[in-house]
Length: 283
Image (cartoon, rainbow, N blue to C red; front, side, top):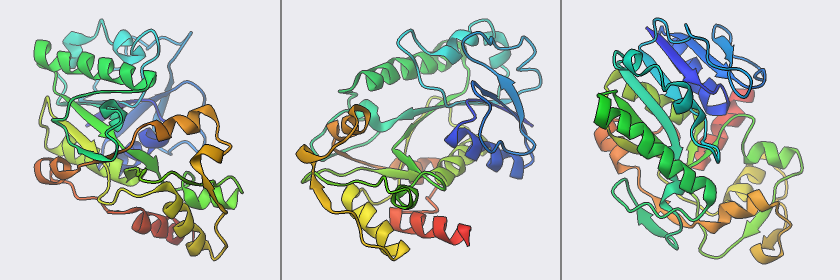
């Protein structure tokens, strides 16, 4: 069993570790040498100036892409354009997208049947990428699965880490909530799908408890035994343009399909269990 992962980033490495634990041979790509690379995972350079080697997909039965599209399109699909006949033999193909494709719902609920109304340019590109990946299933029978990820956190990338680094902002925007997903739950859901493919399906990956960003920071500070940063109104917060853009969308994301159709229940149903687990793992 061989899994090929385009993009050994935060989520990609989590999936790689989970796959290795289940006996898969894992090969993945990187644009820059990954920090703390997963032992046992083969690494291939891929990106501008580094085309995919012709033999990269030899022996592969499962393929996952974690790489976002650019202004010029999806670089992975471009690289795979001449490999459709090989992919038709795959048992499973996955693409990690984002719940940003739903856009702003002013705190309303969305599920996989909701219209796609992206408000950000990067989310609009995701809609186009999803359609291109799904066309491989519709036109070629390649078993594509789409996973729409909520805000990702985990060891090394959480409220715990931002608080320790003194970079945490306790920003308050009334009514604003975010759905989240622990990186290990991304890996768990992906591995569940690989074991029981359902080609053409789309799944939201998120926990059970959408929450305001300021309460997550406050809870992390409580776990660390420190005072939380002072609460700052959103319109007074000194945020980068990228950080500010995350507040453009306000919605509650349903994970019912993930639990009832995919059959995966999150290990960390809220940020509370997730942050506690991060601290516990350190000790």
